[in-house]
Length: 206
Image 1 (tube, rainbow, N blue to C red):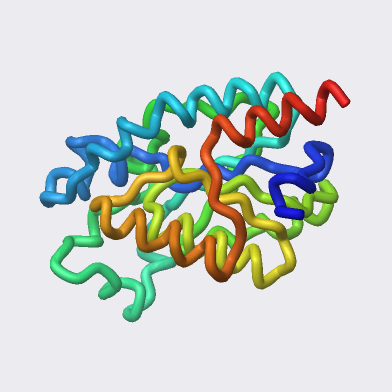
Image 2: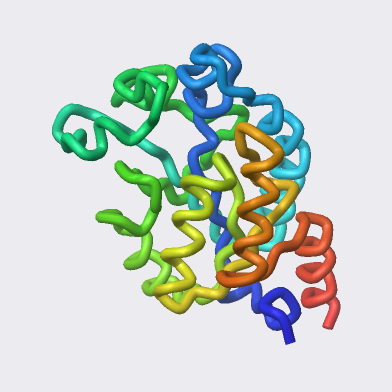
């Protein structure tokens, strides 16, 4: 039986990674440096629909937000992006670090991260363990970097991973599809939001 078929909403959380202006907006740092952000707007209707359904089902929603500042910029980290000025990406207290077309509510959880994975030096694992979560529905940007890094680490920590093909976006279709194949083979289950919603609805009626 697949992770999705075994999903128990009382132990499942929706994880939304890095849906922020600098990563998603055409006028954000990456968009202005020539990266193709068009996949982000393509995914937003599906993500919005999933968020609404998660709220209706009382699923925990965890918004992951990248914040960079001088005290978190190691020498290694400062040279992570080849050919891109990473100095201006998601700086603390800037418009670029703000959420893009989503707005966490008072009862939602925001986890701040400083590296690709939302599990590295954050409170995410403690939150999930405290809430008795064992299944993560993975969404956000970019498919092949921060969402995949978080999904991989989550799997290594024994979380069941459901990775949504229509609620993730990369800066090329090739990068997006490469990650979907990798996750499917090694780290979890790939599905779309309609399948997740239908499984949640089925669970509610049984």
